[in-house]
Length: 165
Ligand code: FES
Image (cartoon, rainbow, N blue to C red; front, side):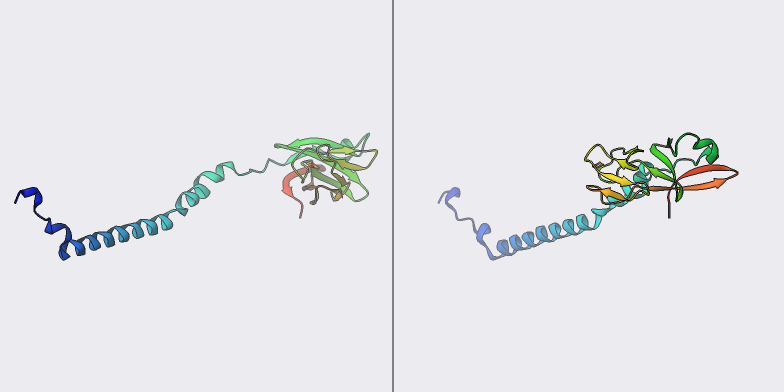
């Protein structure tokens, strides 16, 4: 009998079958372990990003802005536009007192304009409108304009980059 015609007993022996099963079980156990490690470690990049990278991109409040006395600000009209950091801001004097609004439309972020003849803030992007107190007058915006904190300090009106409470 030639060597090539000899049956290969090692391939089908009971010992070889149990070794294959053992290898299959080890492979499955390794896959299970790898899956568990991946599931456990997956949140770590997100956590690292939140603690190390994201703070650098968070909004830092602008320094308070001292504008002068009310008498010097509202000489010819009852409103004045200014900048506070990267925000367009309007101070408006009405029967309720002096208020400061962030002119960023709460719908999609366009800049609203004060329309003295309408006594409203108007957004030209989608037609939204806000009353003089910042509340919504016409949708699509659903949230009022952001009202910023104002303080009277040493005879001056000071605007803070902080939402009025
Ligand atoms: S962004 Fe102002 S109405 Fe849409």
